[in-house]
Length: 251
Ligand code: 1GP
Figure 1: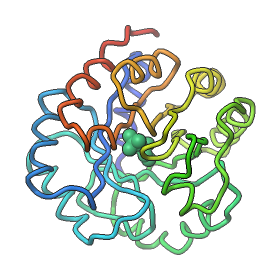
Figure 2: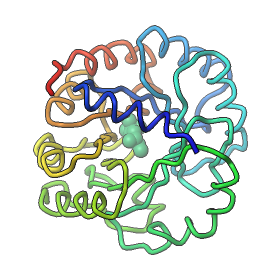
Figure 3: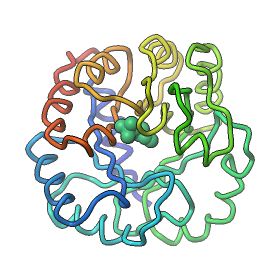
Figure 4: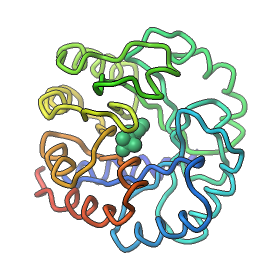
Protein backbone atom coordinates (compact mmCIF):
# COMPACT_ATOMS: atom_id res chain seq x y z
CA UNK A 1 0.00 0.00 0.00
CA UNK A 2 1.34 3.42 -0.90
CA UNK A 3 0.99 6.46 1.32
CA UNK A 4 1.15 9.03 -1.43
CA UNK A 5 -2.02 10.91 -0.50
CA UNK A 6 -1.34 10.92 3.22
CA UNK A 7 2.21 12.12 2.56
CA UNK A 8 0.82 14.94 0.47
CA UNK A 9 -1.58 15.91 3.27
CA UNK A 10 1.08 15.86 5.98
CA UNK A 11 3.60 17.51 3.65
CA UNK A 12 1.24 20.45 3.15
CA UNK A 13 0.55 20.65 6.86
CA UNK A 14 4.28 20.74 7.62
CA UNK A 15 4.69 23.50 5.06
CA UNK A 16 1.86 25.43 6.77
CA UNK A 17 -0.35 25.21 3.67
CA UNK A 18 -4.11 24.75 3.87
CA UNK A 19 -6.00 22.45 1.52
CA UNK A 20 -9.39 22.66 -0.11
CA UNK A 21 -11.48 19.59 -0.90
CA UNK A 22 -14.74 19.45 -2.86
CA UNK A 23 -17.17 16.74 -1.81
CA UNK A 24 -19.05 15.05 -4.64
CA UNK A 25 -22.07 12.95 -3.76
CA UNK A 26 -22.47 10.38 -6.57
CA UNK A 27 -26.25 10.51 -6.13
CA UNK A 28 -26.42 14.16 -6.96
CA UNK A 29 -24.35 14.51 -10.11
CA UNK A 30 -24.58 13.45 -13.72
CA UNK A 31 -21.72 13.25 -16.22
CA UNK A 32 -22.16 16.84 -17.37
CA UNK A 33 -22.08 18.18 -13.81
CA UNK A 34 -19.01 16.12 -12.97
CA UNK A 35 -17.22 17.50 -16.03
CA UNK A 36 -18.06 21.02 -14.93
CA UNK A 37 -16.91 20.44 -11.34
CA UNK A 38 -13.63 18.93 -12.48
CA UNK A 39 -12.99 21.80 -14.87
CA UNK A 40 -13.71 24.37 -12.16
CA UNK A 41 -11.64 22.33 -9.71
CA UNK A 42 -8.63 22.42 -12.03
CA UNK A 43 -8.96 26.17 -12.59
CA UNK A 44 -9.39 26.81 -8.85
CA UNK A 45 -6.47 24.49 -7.93
CA UNK A 46 -8.62 22.34 -5.68
CA UNK A 47 -6.41 19.96 -3.69
CA UNK A 48 -8.70 16.92 -3.46
CA UNK A 49 -12.06 15.57 -4.55
CA UNK A 50 -13.85 13.63 -1.84
CA UNK A 51 -16.44 11.21 -3.19
CA UNK A 52 -19.19 9.72 -1.06
CA UNK A 53 -22.26 10.40 0.99
CA UNK A 54 -24.19 9.05 3.95
CA UNK A 55 -26.59 7.40 1.55
CA UNK A 56 -25.37 6.41 -1.87
CA UNK A 57 -28.43 5.09 -3.62
CA UNK A 58 -27.13 4.99 -7.17
CA UNK A 59 -24.65 2.34 -8.23
CA UNK A 60 -22.39 4.44 -10.41
CA UNK A 61 -19.62 5.14 -7.89
CA UNK A 62 -16.97 3.50 -10.12
CA UNK A 63 -18.12 5.55 -13.10
CA UNK A 64 -18.04 8.80 -11.13
CA UNK A 65 -14.54 8.12 -9.85
CA UNK A 66 -13.26 7.03 -13.27
CA UNK A 67 -14.67 10.12 -14.92
CA UNK A 68 -13.04 12.48 -12.40
CA UNK A 69 -9.71 10.68 -12.84
CA UNK A 70 -9.96 10.78 -16.61
CA UNK A 71 -10.59 14.51 -16.76
CA UNK A 72 -7.72 15.68 -14.56
CA UNK A 73 -5.07 14.89 -12.00
CA UNK A 74 -6.74 16.06 -8.79
CA UNK A 75 -6.63 13.09 -6.39
CA UNK A 76 -9.90 11.33 -5.54
CA UNK A 77 -10.38 10.28 -1.94
CA UNK A 78 -13.35 8.11 -1.00
CA UNK A 79 -15.45 9.31 1.92
CA UNK A 80 -17.68 6.28 2.38
CA UNK A 81 -20.97 6.35 4.23
CA UNK A 82 -21.20 2.56 4.05
CA UNK A 83 -18.86 -0.40 3.45
CA UNK A 84 -20.26 -0.81 -0.06
CA UNK A 85 -18.80 2.54 -1.14
CA UNK A 86 -15.41 1.28 -2.23
CA UNK A 87 -14.02 1.93 -5.69
CA UNK A 88 -10.59 0.65 -6.62
CA UNK A 89 -10.28 3.46 -9.14
CA UNK A 90 -9.86 6.10 -6.41
CA UNK A 91 -6.52 7.19 -4.95
CA UNK A 92 -7.30 6.64 -1.29
CA UNK A 93 -10.08 5.85 1.14
CA UNK A 94 -10.86 7.54 4.44
CA UNK A 95 -11.31 4.57 6.76
CA UNK A 96 -13.75 6.26 9.09
CA UNK A 97 -14.46 5.22 12.65
CA UNK A 98 -17.24 7.29 14.23
CA UNK A 99 -15.37 8.04 17.45
CA UNK A 100 -17.85 10.71 18.59
CA UNK A 101 -20.65 8.12 18.79
CA UNK A 102 -21.20 4.98 20.81
CA UNK A 103 -22.59 2.85 18.04
CA UNK A 104 -20.29 -0.18 17.95
CA UNK A 105 -21.25 -0.91 14.33
CA UNK A 106 -19.74 2.37 13.15
CA UNK A 107 -16.79 2.23 15.51
CA UNK A 108 -15.62 -1.24 14.41
CA UNK A 109 -18.47 -3.57 13.35
CA UNK A 110 -18.78 -2.56 9.70
CA UNK A 111 -15.00 -2.40 9.40
CA UNK A 112 -14.73 -6.07 10.36
CA UNK A 113 -17.32 -7.02 7.74
CA UNK A 114 -15.74 -4.99 4.97
CA UNK A 115 -12.06 -5.53 5.84
CA UNK A 116 -11.31 -8.19 3.15
CA UNK A 117 -13.01 -6.12 0.44
CA UNK A 118 -11.22 -2.94 1.49
CA UNK A 119 -7.86 -4.72 1.61
CA UNK A 120 -8.39 -6.33 -1.81
CA UNK A 121 -9.13 -2.95 -3.36
CA UNK A 122 -5.45 -2.08 -3.05
CA UNK A 123 -6.45 1.47 -2.12
CA UNK A 124 -4.38 3.66 0.13
CA UNK A 125 -6.21 3.48 3.45
CA UNK A 126 -6.21 6.51 5.73
CA UNK A 127 -7.44 5.70 9.22
CA UNK A 128 -9.69 8.59 10.23
CA UNK A 129 -11.27 9.51 13.54
CA UNK A 130 -14.66 10.83 12.42
CA UNK A 131 -16.36 13.21 14.83
CA UNK A 132 -19.87 14.48 14.21
CA UNK A 133 -20.58 17.82 15.87
CA UNK A 134 -24.12 19.13 16.37
CA UNK A 135 -24.88 21.42 13.45
CA UNK A 136 -28.22 22.74 14.68
CA UNK A 137 -30.54 20.29 12.93
CA UNK A 138 -30.57 16.54 12.38
CA UNK A 139 -28.58 15.76 9.25
CA UNK A 140 -28.46 12.54 7.25
CA UNK A 141 -25.27 11.49 9.01
CA UNK A 142 -26.73 11.97 12.49
CA UNK A 143 -29.87 10.01 11.58
CA UNK A 144 -28.07 7.19 9.77
CA UNK A 145 -25.37 6.84 12.40
CA UNK A 146 -27.93 6.48 15.19
CA UNK A 147 -25.45 8.21 17.47
CA UNK A 148 -25.61 11.56 19.22
CA UNK A 149 -23.34 14.24 17.87
CA UNK A 150 -21.02 16.13 20.20
CA UNK A 151 -22.84 19.26 21.44
CA UNK A 152 -21.60 22.33 19.56
CA UNK A 153 -20.49 24.12 22.72
CA UNK A 154 -18.70 21.22 24.40
CA UNK A 155 -15.16 21.89 23.29
CA UNK A 156 -13.76 19.71 26.04
CA UNK A 157 -15.56 16.61 24.73
CA UNK A 158 -14.23 17.34 21.23
CA UNK A 159 -10.71 17.83 22.59
CA UNK A 160 -10.68 14.56 24.52
CA UNK A 161 -12.25 12.62 21.63
CA UNK A 162 -9.67 13.90 19.13
CA UNK A 163 -6.81 13.21 21.53
CA UNK A 164 -8.05 9.65 22.04
CA UNK A 165 -8.31 9.16 18.27
CA UNK A 166 -4.75 10.32 17.75
CA UNK A 167 -3.42 8.11 20.55
CA UNK A 168 -5.28 5.13 19.07
CA UNK A 169 -3.18 5.64 15.95
CA UNK A 170 -5.64 7.40 13.68
CA UNK A 171 -3.97 9.47 10.99
CA UNK A 172 -6.59 12.19 10.53
CA UNK A 173 -9.33 13.77 12.59
CA UNK A 174 -12.41 14.78 10.57
CA UNK A 175 -14.85 17.01 12.43
CA UNK A 176 -18.15 17.24 10.55
CA UNK A 177 -21.27 19.26 11.36
CA UNK A 178 -23.04 17.13 8.73
CA UNK A 179 -23.88 17.90 5.15
CA UNK A 180 -25.99 21.02 4.87
CA UNK A 181 -25.64 21.79 8.59
CA UNK A 182 -27.42 24.94 9.75
CA UNK A 183 -24.39 25.87 11.83
CA UNK A 184 -20.87 24.95 10.88
CA UNK A 185 -18.35 24.04 13.59
CA UNK A 186 -17.29 26.98 15.75
CA UNK A 187 -13.84 28.47 15.34
CA UNK A 188 -13.36 28.07 19.08
CA UNK A 189 -13.89 24.30 18.84
CA UNK A 190 -11.60 24.05 15.80
CA UNK A 191 -8.85 25.99 17.60
CA UNK A 192 -9.27 23.94 20.77
CA UNK A 193 -8.94 20.61 18.90
CA UNK A 194 -6.13 21.80 16.61
CA UNK A 195 -4.20 22.81 19.72
CA UNK A 196 -4.09 19.30 21.16
CA UNK A 197 -3.36 17.08 18.15
CA UNK A 198 -0.45 16.82 15.73
CA UNK A 199 -2.27 14.90 13.00
CA UNK A 200 -4.09 16.85 10.27
CA UNK A 201 -7.55 18.23 11.06
CA UNK A 202 -10.32 18.10 8.43
CA UNK A 203 -13.35 20.37 8.87
CA UNK A 204 -16.65 20.15 6.99
CA UNK A 205 -20.40 20.62 7.22
CA UNK A 206 -22.35 23.79 6.48
CA UNK A 207 -19.42 25.85 5.22
CA UNK A 208 -21.21 28.11 2.78
CA UNK A 209 -19.05 31.16 2.27
CA UNK A 210 -15.38 31.81 1.57
CA UNK A 211 -14.89 33.86 4.71
CA UNK A 212 -16.01 30.97 6.90
CA UNK A 213 -13.58 28.68 5.10
CA UNK A 214 -10.78 31.22 5.63
CA UNK A 215 -11.56 31.69 9.33
CA UNK A 216 -11.79 27.94 9.91
CA UNK A 217 -8.30 27.57 8.45
CA UNK A 218 -6.99 30.42 10.57
CA UNK A 219 -8.46 28.64 13.61
CA UNK A 220 -6.49 25.48 12.80
CA UNK A 221 -8.24 23.44 10.11
CA UNK A 222 -5.80 21.82 7.67
CA UNK A 223 -8.38 20.71 5.09
CA UNK A 224 -11.73 22.35 4.41
CA UNK A 225 -14.44 20.17 2.81
CA UNK A 226 -17.39 21.75 1.02
CA UNK A 227 -20.22 19.86 -0.66
CA UNK A 228 -23.71 21.32 -0.44
CA UNK A 229 -23.07 24.95 -1.19
CA UNK A 230 -20.97 24.05 -4.24
CA UNK A 231 -23.71 21.69 -5.45
CA UNK A 232 -26.04 24.69 -5.36
CA UNK A 233 -23.57 27.12 -6.91
CA UNK A 234 -20.51 25.48 -8.52
CA UNK A 235 -18.91 28.86 -9.20
CA UNK A 236 -18.26 29.11 -5.44
CA UNK A 237 -15.35 26.68 -5.97
CA UNK A 238 -13.18 29.56 -7.17
CA UNK A 239 -13.77 31.86 -4.21
CA UNK A 240 -13.68 29.08 -1.63
CA UNK A 241 -10.44 27.63 -2.93
CA UNK A 242 -8.84 31.06 -3.20
CA UNK A 243 -9.88 31.87 0.38
CA UNK A 244 -8.39 28.64 1.76
CA UNK A 245 -5.17 29.06 -0.20
CA UNK A 246 -4.81 32.69 0.87
CA UNK A 247 -4.38 31.83 4.55
CA UNK A 248 -0.88 33.00 5.45
CA UNK A 249 1.65 30.20 5.88
CA UNK A 250 2.36 29.66 9.57
CA UNK A 251 4.96 27.07 10.49
C1 1GP B 1 -20.39 16.56 4.88
O1 1GP B 1 -18.40 17.63 5.59
C2 1GP B 1 -19.19 17.38 4.50
O2 1GP B 1 -20.07 15.33 5.37
C3 1GP B 1 -19.56 18.61 3.73
O3 1GP B 1 -20.70 19.27 4.23
O4 1GP B 1 -22.22 19.42 2.27
O5 1GP B 1 -22.51 20.94 4.23
O6 1GP B 1 -20.59 21.23 2.70
P1 1GP B 1 -21.54 20.27 3.29
